[in-house]
Image 1: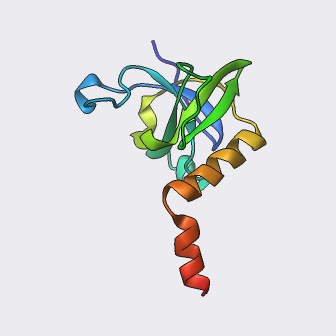
Image 2: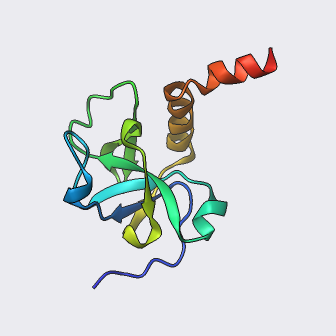
Length: 125
């Protein structure tokens, strides 16, 4: 029986369910670990949240849109290019949370990944 998750906050790491029917190609399928990236305001609604999948495979190699992580002293990486929105009910179990340094690195890569810095410069020019 699954644990009922009552609250979830940005930066926390959870196991969540992903259906094989929802995935194609190299998308991650099965039960995964992920870090919550949506705002706590959205998370309070307990409807949907934005999650970044984590993996411990090939953790020594970090690509452009990945961030090195350590969850419960286990090395891994956040896969920003596989960010997704999931229903709150998919959360199964809390494992821990990322550090402020890890979350800052995710923010920085996120800004680069979506060219937010270029857009922001255009707005203020």
